[in-house]
Amino acid sequence: MTSSLPDQHETLRRWRLILGRYAEAPMSSCTSFSGQDWQLDQTLDFLYGREYEGRGLVRGGGGALDPSQIQAVDWLNRSRKLFPRDVYERMQTQAVERYQMTELLSDPALLEALEPTPALTKALISMRGRLSGQMRDAVRQIIRRTVDEITRRLRQDFVNALSGRRNRQRRSSLKDSRNFDARATILANLRHFDVGSKRLLIERPLFNARVKRHLPWDVILCVDQSGSMLDSVIYSAVLAGIMASLPAVRVKLVLFDTSVVDLTHLAHDPVEVLLTVQLGGGTDIGRALRYCETLVDQPQRTVLVLISDFEEGAPPLHLLAAVKRLAESRVTLLGLAALDDAATPIYDRLMAQRLADRGMQIAALTPPHFAEWLAEVMQ
Image (tube, rainbow, N blue to C red; front, side, top):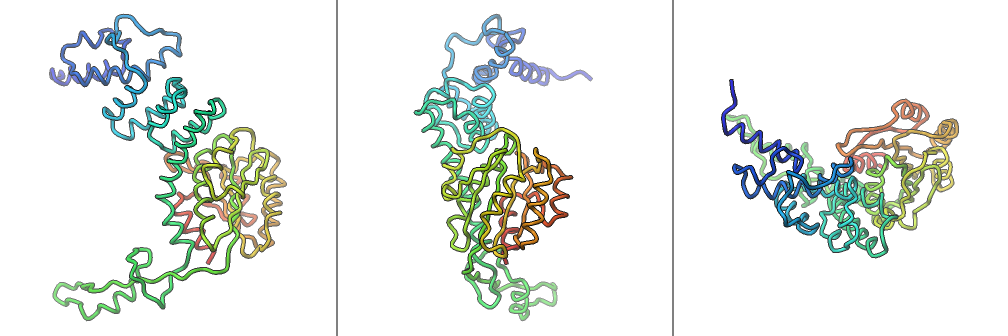
């Protein structure tokens, strides 16, 4: 069966937008394309035409766009209008990370106009050493906006989980589903049971209150900052900032690759932590844990969280020995495996098992679930 004429036009349109100026027929010769198609073609070519240039092809020729080339500011504004938000955010990240668009990296106003996302923040952190002082200020603002948004999403989970446990003897007016007391609610509403429909009508749901924890816990975040761990570093910095604001938790923040950096004095400020990160190099987890041993004051009220892909670059003997010593001293050891952008765990499972055999609990969790896990071990 042959395709209908409208289907053929749509297929031709899609291929023309994919191939850009290097298609056989320029957009101007395709009379069936709309004005929005023209704008899409310009916008895509402004960014992805750089791919051809990187392969030695020059702009120009039979597929040229109209004489009025768009500028970076026009590209930003137009992309934001033409594409769904997730597509636009991916394009702006590729503009900075893959193509290192000089127009954006030399104008603070354009950089500040970008949509702050974790992906963009990762790209800017990795190249901030090549930026001027004025541009570094703009990068700082983007990182701050990203951190503020992540903090806004995660903070309540950590406050609820770490500020107190459920108090079943006291009721709360806060209608939080995590505090819902199903058993007490059923008992209190049994008189409303409808025999005919066999349904229990809930007149008044009951919720448990929270009690404050007064005995503080020490939480040592030991974070792998090798090149593959930037996603985890960003979230770890935010989590350290949140926990540093809680009265029942004393946070110590340690970053490592083959070197170890104690950033406890910056734990309250995730932005400064991220501006301090030095990505790259190898990984010496054993050295980092040996340093963390020196930070332990009250073993039975200390949680040491190793955030890593567990890809040990040094001989594992020192790492395994440190884990065994810490476990025997009754420090609570949590190993939080690295997650990629799609929240898929990426870590050395063999090493994770060896760590678990010596007393470290291992899990791959998103930050909200990590908050619940941390709260459970601190009960």
